[in-house]
Length: 238
Image 1 (tube, one colour):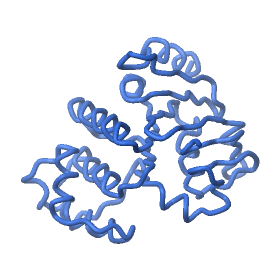
Image 2 (cartoon, rainbow, N blue to C red):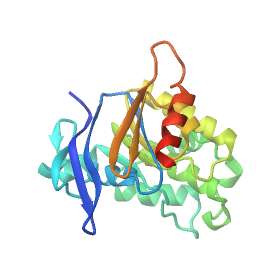
Image 3 (cartoon, rainbow, N blue to C red):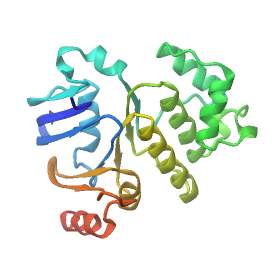
Image 4 (cartoon, rainbow, N blue to C red):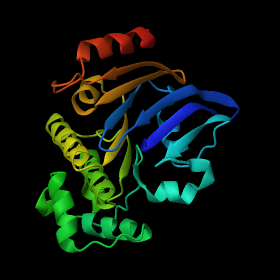
């Protein structure tokens, strides 16, 4: 049974069609990337799986059940990282994590918080500092740690590497692969062709709301063919 499944998904926002007949499915432990330019429908896809948008036709399924049948159950199975996560500037990393995780009814002790912050490589000396002193990349690391700590079977990540430097992006890609090997299913949105090819098992290329191509990681290979994906991406961006 697919963990995530889009069936002929068509979605409108403000009277405009932003997804048209999009279909794909994900099995447990897979990493898929939604790749495309601005307005392609990537974030809309995530919001539909979360039940914030209702399809005009087709359906989105989480763990075998249509999201429209039980939005609460779908959200309980998902940790969602938006493109611009809201964190409180007057709180430090620990305080932000404790507060937001309490809203999700997730109990964590200091050891668990440090373990997650270690995984995203946030310096130990920064963790007691107020968030208002953080760079964008440091804030993004805290947000990624929060998604990990939710311990849900599914992660939806919208531009998770925004603000990260190249070394941090490599660390993030290794983290995502580790999460997948541990059985978690990850759907991420990105503009980054290179990063998507290195982290994903499958890439779905969206253009103006339509699925115009899919690319799989060949068996025994460590990445998807970057040149093929870049050529397709460039052809639709022209």
